[in-house]
Image (tube, rainbow, N blue to C red; front, side, top):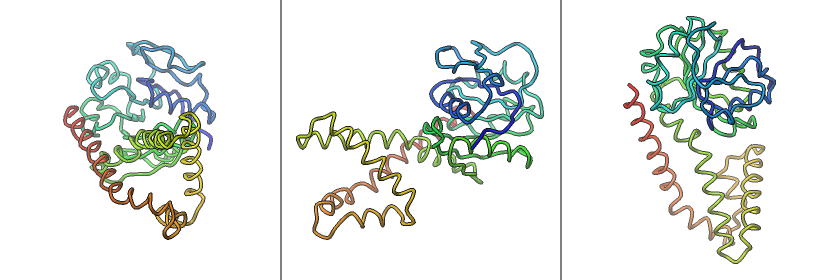
Length: 268
């Protein structure tokens, strides 16, 4: 999906996540000449994008501003950023745990503020992007949805209180899956396979299984049962996983969700 015409875009922060989104937009056709990134580390800003080490004292209001700093840095950037925003500016925030009310308290000018929870695969157009908006008119909603659609699956979240859960599931989810891939390869090596070979096989196994799950009409639980013959080796392995996996993942998401709630309290 191509990126629609947006007008000037300002990124405040261009670290791992914001940089991944920007690279995804550029790959989908966004003109880098439209983009300015405020980022201390110039090496993280893609070629062709205007780089600033700090916010300018004045200038024309961008059409779209995306906040990509750490939540703890919000009060450092807000005093300089707020005067640059106009009522028609669409403010996007990818700050984990930072609620709309906290954003409105610091940025009163924009009519539209959108919380966005992306994840790292957005860089290759395979991300998950959860959105919750306030004050966004239909044309703006269409524009934001098209921008995020260039990066992957777009899901609108009606209840902002669910954003902590979204962050735990899809925002943090790639890290959990990366850890699983790593552990799967290490388990193969523990059985005697060369470590590099086991790592390659684990990565390809997970990638292939995910692609199959996406292409199948069956849900992942059903697909697992299709692989597991009664009394076979897969069934024996699943018996071990099934004793602990659901509880382990629930505990993992709860821990991440709880930290998001703590971040929200810190930025109120």
